[in-house]
Image 1 (cartoon, one colour):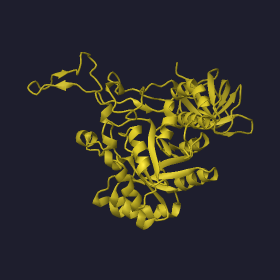
Image 2 (image 1 turned 60 degrees about the horizontal axis):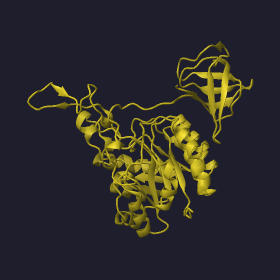
Image 3 (image 1 turned 180 degrees about the vertical axis):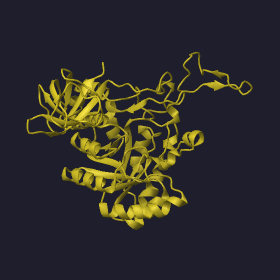
Amino acid sequence: MVNNKRKTELLVPASNLEVLKTAVIYGADAVYIGGEAFGLRAKAKNFSADDMKAGIAFAHDRGVKVYVTANILAHNYDLDGAREYFKELGKIGPDALIISDPGMFTLAKEECPEIDIHISTQANNTNYLTYDFWWKMGAKRVVSARELSLKELREIRDHIPEEMEIESFIHGAMCISYSGRCLLSNFFTGRDANQGACTHPCRWKYSVMEETRPGEYYPVYENERGTYIFNSKDLCMIEYVPELIEAGIDSFKIEGRMKTALYVATVARTYRKAIDDLKNGEDVYRANMDWYKEEISKCTYRRFTTGFYFGKPSDEAQVYDTNTYINEYIYLGTVANIDSDGFAVIEQKNKFCVGDEIEIMKPDGRNIATKVNAMYNADGESVESCPHPGQEIHLDLSIQPEIYDILRVSNN
């Protein structure tokens, strides 16, 4: 029997207000977001102050927490702006701030002491003395370095205060560099990963050039396409939820603050069901494993690995032949409203046509096949397809969805 005396939190990313709402509806206990500065996803759409207020209100109305990232490694020129930013966050009122830099930690404690602080994985939290240090400084939670095994996490849990929380990544992209502290992007492009501007050079294709033969490139092994020598598989721990709980992890963190609503909904819904099933008995959880694995593969991914959880990964954790995602389903849109004719209203994300067989993805785990009988643009004009992303489309489907249902179609 799994020892789950500690409450397990499912923590889901959101790149914008739409995705935050999706994360909340599809099973998150908490959502982490970035403001318009001082986070490590500068290319994500992120949240304005108004969107942040709206998102926090939406989440809190449904009993869900919101954490805000401010986890850059700050330079001198960042500090004055960061102080003002923390003053603003103090008024907005998220549930916690995610911080890695001791200077940023100091500013946050000074300007919004009433907000909990979680120490980011960027701070390289690899041992229980580090956790204890941050606890004594006033942090409530530490996000473990991705390089820790379940055995090491269990040892940390045994050596830190009972009320201190451990958060660990359990699904999503892995970084080739130590807990995200990568210098490749800065070296190649001048864009600093530790300031939120990573260009992800770990996903690029590389060849070898011999020093005395400039311009002559050799593949790393005998394949004319080169090789993706830094390209990790994606982390997936859906088969090991009991082991994560036994290790003493309080918060299961999903990576992906630049992902679509479809990705967030798919991953959140799957882990939500797995966690809830486990509460009803490990036999229930094991019985539904095929469903979890089938569903989790319907979002974009680069094959799967268990990362460092069971020891240092081998070469099997890398993808050497491609840097592209496996993408089994295409995101069509989220139902924003039901119009006066009873038609589903979406902001269309990808093209589909009248007559297509599509799928309604529901928060409760059901997937319902439906057919597009007709579609209309925002002016009420009948159209045969919607080729332009961002269009407002009204859909007459053979089975009508509800607000917050997601529409998708198989890519096969």
